[in-house]
Length: 129
Image 1 (cartoon, helix red, strand yellow):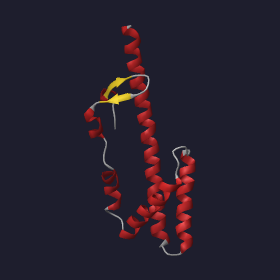
Image 2 (spheres, rainbow, N blue to C red):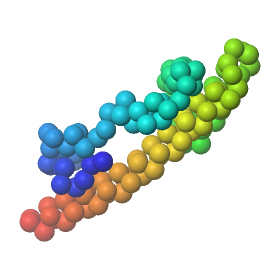
Image 3 (cartoon, helix red, strand yellow):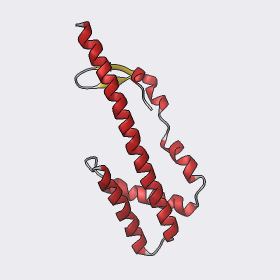
Image 4 (cartoon, one colour):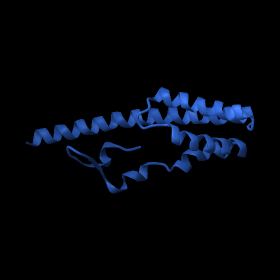
């Protein structure tokens, strides 16, 4: 989570964060720790396999609902192979859907905070001149 105080400078081309701002962000492995430590190795493997496949399918321009559909498509591809337990596959798919939803909410909150920080910085800049 980043806060307005983490912003060092704002100019027309970039927002520069203080050097220690990234200390507020958890690592990806920390994000997965609670879920994956409680799940079977099969579910863990499916999450990784689905994530690897999604990495090649998801574009930076995809809308959130498109990503949700792609997660379902990958789940269905793996289900059709008949090589995976359907319950484990469903758990892995639900996990990825939940993580995607969490990510979307986090981005939304961060966007709102960034807008507030930019608005505050703009007010400071325009009132000084």
